Length: 456
Image (cartoon, rainbow, N blue to C red; front, side, top):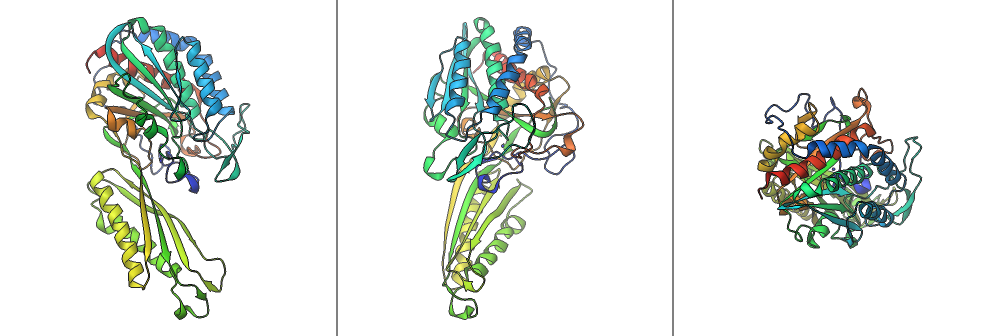
C-alpha cells in the first residue's frame, strides 16, 4: 500500500510500492478486533436495494473479470492490454471511456439523471515483478522486463481485484444512473507500484496533473485496497493519516582506493558508510518525537567493493523514509543529509546525498469519514473496523491532497487462515474471492450515498 502497505516487499520495489503487511495477531496489523463503536446507525439508502440486486446479478462476472485480469498482469506503465480490457467492459455498460490518460489510464463518467455533486472512485491497474507460486487455474505465467531483466509478473498486491470491483460497482451505478443526483468519475489508474526515475511523473500524480479531478470538478474521492492477513469481508477505516509518506534517499560516499593490506594509504568508504548507517538509526531513536507520529528510516542497500583485499573508491547506500507529519518529514530529510556529510567530512572526504520525495501521506478527510461511516456499516454490516495507521504508502495520496478523500481496507484471507496468510507482494499472495462483492458494494454505496446527500 508506495511507494507501499507493509507487505513482504521485493527490495527493488521498496521505495515506491504499496506495502501492506500483517495478520490479525501479528505485529503491524492495523485492524482491531471489535466493530467500530462511534458510527451512526446505518440508515436506509435510497438506491441501496437496487444496487445490491444488480451486484448479485453480476457476481459471476465480477469473478470472471478478476480472474482474467489476474491471468494477464502487466507491469507499471505497461498496462496496454489491461486498459483495453477495462475500456471494453465500460463500453459494454454504455459508457464512453477516455483512454491514454497518464499513459495507460482509463477514465469514464457516469452522468446521473439529476444535478448534484461529483464523486470519484479509483482502482489501480499495475502488477508486480513477482513469479506466482499459487496453484490456481488462472495462475499467471506472464513474463515481463524489470530493470532490464526478464521477470515473472503477478498481481501480487490485488490490483486485479481492485479493477474488477470497480467495474462491478460501475455496472451497478449505471443501472441506477437515472436516479443519481450528480456524477461518478471512474479512475482506472496505472503505475501505482512505481516506475523508473526516467518515467516520472506517473500514476496518480500524473493522473492529477492531466486533470482527472477537474473536468468534471470532483468533490470527493474514494479508494479501496485489499489486505492480506485479515478475514475476508472485513472493512477497515481510519481518520486522518492512514498511510505514510514514502521517500527514498541515496548516499554515495567518496573513498580512495588502495590495497587492503595498507588501509592508511587510502580512505575506506565501507567504514565511513557503516558509521553513517549506524548514525542514521539515531534519527528516529534519539531525534524524533515519536509521541507525535511514528517514523521509519531504513537503509535497504549497501553496495561497495569487488574484492577481499581492495579498499574500494566508493560506497552507495539507498534507503527509505516513512513519516506521517510534513514537518517531521522535512526534519528527517535534513538530518540524513547533515549526518552523512558530517561523518564523511570527519574522515577527510565527502558524501553526495540525494533525498527524493515520493508518495505523500495518505490522509482521510475526517469530516468525510464521519459522513460515510453509516454507509460502510450498511455495506458490510458487523464487519467494519477502525484501524491504526501503517507505515506503508499509496499514491492515492495525490488525489486526497486535492479533494477530500477516504481510503479503506478490505480483508481477503479465508476465515481461520489469517495468522498464516502470505502478505501482499508475496508470490503466494491469495485472495478469497468471497470478499469481492463486499468491496464492490462498499465502492458503489459510498458513491451513491455521497451523491444522495446532495452537499458539496
